[in-house]
Image (tube, rainbow, N blue to C red; front, side):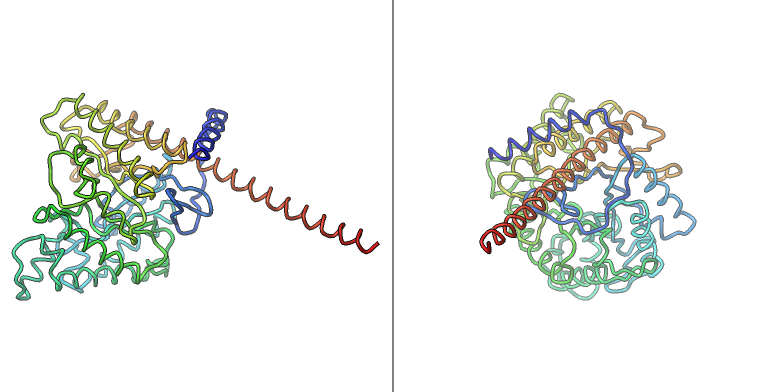
Length: 434
């Protein structure tokens, strides 16, 4: 702990010196993201992600006439220093479906996903690819359950997704199909492509029929093991929102008023899960609260998860969704939410802590009016938010550069010590001979 405090102080002093430095755009490093302790790592240095959600990338890329929007949003993101995007690698039985029925895939849609991955590589942006939805949008677990029901399975609830053997077989087949897909543009299998940082088992898994959390726990463990048996290159996360369960009953006081059947501690302690995730939507979860109450909740929510990732999980934590709708609040209030999360992430990262970054919901480019939900950020329309995002990118980039310099200094010192030892050994040998 003393070494961590000293490291944090050293980093802080270096960052003060660099504070006037100009942010320079650099091409994202090749290589797979890994985990070491509480840090995401890339090429030997901690990787801090400032990122964005864009669930719609594959959907638009399926239509060649719309692919320019995918390229535009990735180019704009990179220009603002963003290095990570989270998006859907699923569309089950819906318009432009990727999987039209169990095991039956639309090649045109798959080529849309191929394009997304190749463009992300082009612009130096890593990806988190989610494999199924908890909700019925884009099919989700309800579609899987309906497919099984149509095959004569006795299923009564969407929660049977987590326990029915036929449904689980459908989902495992989807995992295998995605991971072993060979990109039609790059020629690289998804499981071998370092552009992908991580897989996500499900967007916001919930199982309200079992508040004990045992159902979700067993499902995550089974699916994590299966996925890792196919792909040993990539990281994996469960897609959790961060709600506390029975394994940490004292921390349930930090939950909003809901029982979701998930457990932030127990679920993320599963060996195949490489890092924890947290979502933050105070305005959705506490609908009758004033701004002061929402801000207090957010402060506590963010702080306790960073603390528990550091001390209990001993894994990195990524804030994979956060935002505030312009339909329920002002843009200033949204900026305050961004600033709260960004400040907590930076403070933790600056001290060598477990916060690995944030991915806001969600980034659009021009010409996407039909997709708007109030949470969208369009850089040209939202300059104050854009400035916050760019500033966070600059700060996290400086930390990463500093760690890289430290690593190079250690390598230099180690090389120097080896050469000195070799020189002494040669000279001592000469003295003995004489």
